[in-house]
Image (tube, rainbow, N blue to C red; front, side, top):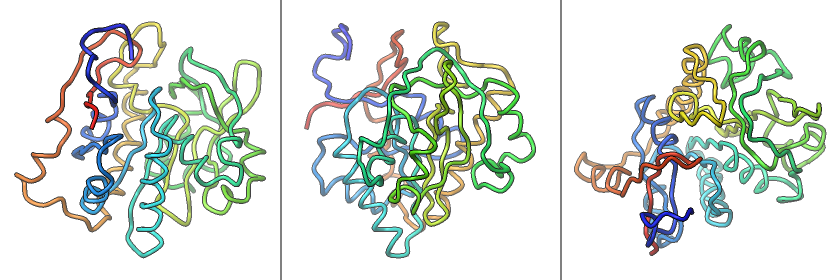
Length: 273
């Protein structure tokens, strides 16, 4: 990851801000670890209630594809199984569904702060923003969605992609400094699938000054609604992880935590299988 000897011997990671995002809404986190035996991942998926595809600069494209296809099959077979993708996680999900794979994405390089949203439909008529209520309109008035991405989706390209349009519709867009629009959030009417190009988990948890994240009370409180909505959706899933002792053995707090001042902040790290 970086020139830091503390990371020696570790193979993959997840930013703690994603864990905090889920836990602040009452969820518990069991990590799906790149490289773990496939049967272990499947065993976890049979017990957890939803899956969050995180952002970052790691590479879990093919592992994520396997997970997403498994979750889609669960839903197709009648089990309500929520999926949320943030930034790269959202990009991965889009590429899995698109007729054009990764080529559906274009370069939208941005890492200099928060943006406002422009809703393409009344947010009160969407799933994730209706949860917020009238205050959702404040996202149009203030720069409260933190963006840090290399790739993104052109809204017109999104709508013209048959694979995507059969499952997703975009609910909001944001604009690059040069005026180009990109898809900011998506949801599905057919599946409990959701995605954001922006990072709602950062507002309350990541404090590097050079990231220019909006840490206002308004931003923190509005962004936490995304966590609450997703965790509420996971409560509609019938899976049960087992006893308290069984859950305690698998939750993410069993893994090593490294506190860093790098851009990824504090991370849970995992060793090679």
